[in-house]
Length: 296
Image (cartoon, rainbow, N blue to C red):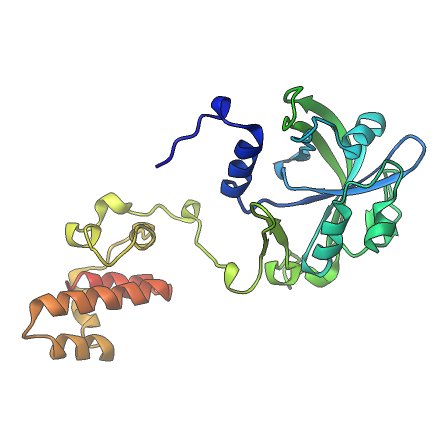
């Protein structure tokens, strides 16, 4: 492992390492106005949600590393204490990126990026019409994290209204991640499109009290075929199958074939059963995987 001390490293290098490692990052596509009503629109990937009651989101317009200058967005929220946090998706990602261009103060990024402003209800800044979600916010506090280039400014926003495009909702009224088609920032020029194979489901441990990896039989825990993720999936199971259940499962066609084919070679049989258990885990058939692995 290479060890880096930020105090002994150039800020630009630390900045690149942090952005490369802490990824993907959600993007706050922030629209603001100054006291004269001039509109600004800019994306920030130092962003997340921190509370639901009250609903609080925080983003951070950092001071530029190269020349220690501040962002127009920060100046605007300091003056007006208002902002709209628009959520970008793949449909508008190129336009969002174009809006990040450092245009001179007073230049309207809506016009430059070709995006359409839509009047907000409770704040003066417009929201992005094409955004799947837009949150009108009041700025509760702004916390400066330092005076030097690269220092962030935490803009703590209370969400007053949430606008959601109904086309991204599922039958339960919740946001469907596939329909949202969100984007996120990686390091450098890289982005992530949160769709397709990038999205996967993982049962939350809070829904049940799993036995834990420490309770797995030693031969499973020390397997050279199963990964840590596989072991954790087994450890998230509440009840280990009984010997009777394992014995009954030996009649499964694939299991029976495997047991019969390699019955004269116990080493190969062990490997084949572990591979079958791995495949079942990858297919989210955890109970079946348990039964197979207990045959080893």
